[in-house]
Every structure is written in C-alpha cells, then in structure tokens.
Length: 333
Image (cartoon, one colour):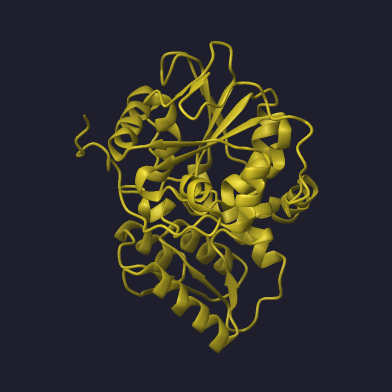
C-alpha cells in the first residue's frame, strides 16, 4: 500500500504494549455473549477488483443493524451491564447514538431521553422519536448540549450513556470486529470511519497486532488527526457533510490510548471525496450508506489509501441513517 501518512503494509509489531487499553478482547467476547440475542449478525459482501479500487474489497454491512448503525451494540452492552433506574436512560447525540439508545431502551422496557444539537438531521431526529425517545434540541454549541445532558442525568438519576468514551461502549462496538473476524478471518487491513472513537477503539482493541486498522476522517471531523497533532485533549468544532454522525468535539480518551498504542494511521478525506465514494458504491453495488459510512470508503476511492495488489481489505459500512439519494444532488469535482 502507499499511504500518504507514510504507513507501510508491515503489520504492527507484536512487541506493542497493550496495557493502556482498558478494553480487552475478553471484554469484547463477554459483550458479544451479553448482546448476541438483541443484535443482528450483519452480512458481508466482497466487491471485485475495480469496483471500488484496484483490489477486491469486503464490506461489512452494519448499516443493516437495528436502528441503522453499529451503535446498537454499545447501547445494548451498556444498558445490559447496568441497573437502569425508573428515570430511564439519557444520551447526547447527533443522531446514530441517540437512535441506538432509544431502540435499546424501548426493547428493554426503559424510557429514553436524547439531547441533540440543532444541526442534527431531521432524518435522524425522526428515527430517535420513532424508536421512542424524548428528543430535546439544545443549541448549536455541542459542549452546551453535553452540559444539558449531564445536568439531566444528575437531576433525574437517569443512566447516562456516553456516545463513545466508556468501556462498555467500546466493548460493545468491538463486537462488530469479532463478527467480521469470524466471517473473513484473513483480512490484512480494516478501514474505519472515526468520530469520537468508540467504534475504532473497540475494533483496534479486538484486532490488536494481527490486522492493520486505518482511521479515516473527514476534514471537518478530524478528532484523531487533531489529537495526534495537538495532544489527546484537543477539541474541534465539527463541520461538513459527516458532522451529524462523526461530529464529536474530541477523540475519546480510551480510543486515543488504543489507537496511539498501536500506532494506527489517520487518513483525511474531503466532503467532495465522500460524496464521490457513496456515488461509486451506489453505482457498483446499489448499497446506500450515510456520509459517515462513506467516509471510510473514500480513503480507497479517492486514492488517499492505496492497497498493495494482494492486500485483503475490509471496510465497515457503519450506518445508513440518511435520506435516500443524499449524495445524488451534491456536486463533486
């Protein structure tokens, strides 16, 4: 592969010290046993060389999961790992996390409240409400939205479900990697979209040194690239086409430790490249993902990540909560 960050195909050294990873493969196995009856084992499909890039690419179709994204895994694991009070659960979300928490709460017989930024898409707010949540738009400053979420949890006693930076969330999200590993056991590289890092933190913790895990971020939601440059507490103001799914203000501390311990590379893509990636996926396979899902794919279709000719590539299509055809009306270069 030829990666603009300078990463090479040589897999991470087995001498990596994983002690900083709070979430372990055993945690992920336990999470999978806990949530297995509540989630879908989503399918995979391999597209031939030339469909997306010069080599075959295996897609894990997690947009077919309950609530339309991988987030159900972390939500169910968190709710099933805690005693839920009469006040129910509360989340803060731009969309997918809130929908997943609402779905899991309703399935388990709990009330749910979700605080959202005003820029959350109508599609995603409708999804949350449809799954039973009380949805509360709370301004455009995401930190202010978080403050309201925390105050609600404190005042009511509701169980707060963090969108990305809690061990139960990372372990739940990591079950998608366990599943992918069983379905396609010989992958060299798995490419993942990154927002707050709950997904890639769990995926990285599962695969360890066995598989390269590549983080892909839009320029407007680059939490990991910013943390690598400015330090683990660096904060961004999310923007752009992927902000409603990848728009965290920072990378989670757990994900930062997992990714930096393994020296996972970060690849940046533009909004135009994300739109073009989804168009290419639609043309090749009639698969519809949301912008956050197409972000990972854009690393391949744009050439920002160039696989070697025999490299076995997997990409997680992480969510599908977008209006049908969202990419068709957009202009690409």
